[in-house]
Length: 130
Image: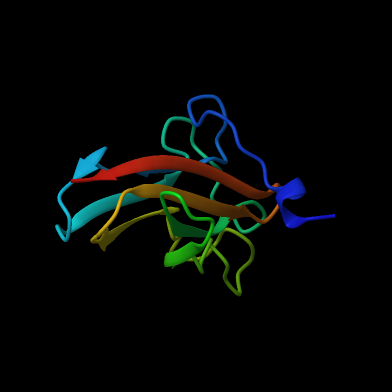
């Protein structure tokens, strides 16, 4: 069975696991674009040693093609772990970050995230290059 059979998607306003892509709908060719990625934007996702988002990846697929380019990978490596016990640590990484990229042609941004309990989730956003 293909990996795509195991990737889930939903509306981020109703599902806390969906990676949210915040970026302009239209950009100029070659212009630097700020792209925000976040899991738990409208509904908070747990961030504990036992239940957390491990990473978010951002892909770009040029319009008219099927080749995804991996633009960035944001890793969240600490979730309250400590010698004193789970969730006793001094730091918790939040599942959010910013990527800056530029584009020559229109296409689709695809974000994928991984929850250590609930697996792979994805979302998409079209980006038009003028």
